Length: 155
Length: 244
Image 1 (cartoon, chains in turn purple, green):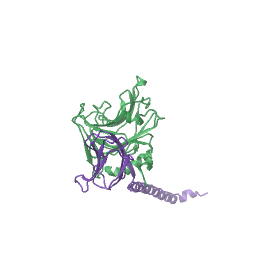
Image 2 (tube, each protein chain N blue to C red):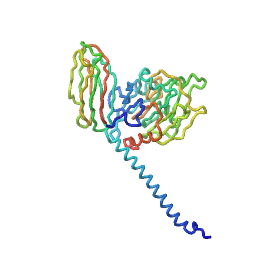
Image 3 (tube, chains in turn blue, yellow):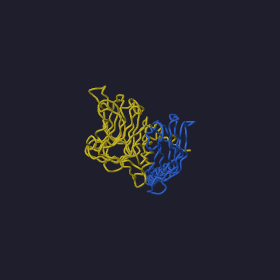
Image 4 (tube, each protein chain N blue to C red):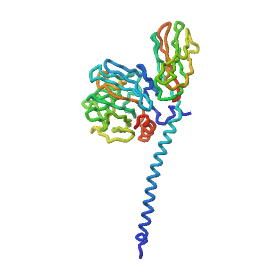
């Protein structure tokens, strides 16, 4: 009896070797594709949020600051809770933006809240920027109070 | 719309410190709990808000020695970090570090009392290892249990990550999303005792020693154990910023 395997083993082995090489290359390509998908997903802006509570002290204090963004990004709005703010308080909220690399943060807008704020939650839209943004709060009259705040942005 | 909370890896994230402020003594926690985080400079040390070549901001902890006021740290009050009081819970920790050494151990993050309660994570200068410690005075004389991994090189950016399953005695560590050989005590990692202390980043729980020295970015904590695949996804997404 002839051993078919013995006669054709060399050719079959060569084919199997080719398959193994191709599989390895395919696995490497899949890994590259996976990394590309992750990078692509990361390039889509994520809607993100941050916040805190600040107690005013009569000085100009940072609410939200991103002084050195990694790149162009889009702050959307800042919300501040004036529930603790009474008829005796006056608050100034200021927005600053840096518009050139290495430049100064420039005052863009001052909003004054004097007396009771009704409804107590205020919002201010923010500008897209690349080089820095700063939002401050300053008590200019009345007693120190706690203000909850929240910023929403895409990065 | 793609949002922070919809990113699968961010499920159950409790603390996220990307250090974007580049100014001041407050850094924002971008996870939902919004833990108030304050930068502290007791004396000779300083914080340096730096930027990588990629433009990503990092926070550098500059220390001048091992003395009681030689370093800097970040903390959050105990009352504001009750959700980080891990006992039997699953949890995970990660971040990017580029550390230096003065020869002393350096706390990365913890909410603990040494050999008393809570958990902490620290770098060992002599052995270039990363340790996770659970403190449990209630189990005296076994007042703490530790595990560690080796090979944490100085002066290079590394992505460290730790996954702890509450049901397991053997947490896992990864460097640049690659699982590491671990060393455990014979008992494994026993549950920490409940802890009512401030969260600290970069210093001993007493805030006067074991200063972290070097750069840090993206320090994060979860209330679940992330998988190896999730660590790889996070690492792959961020590595290019660090040139790793």
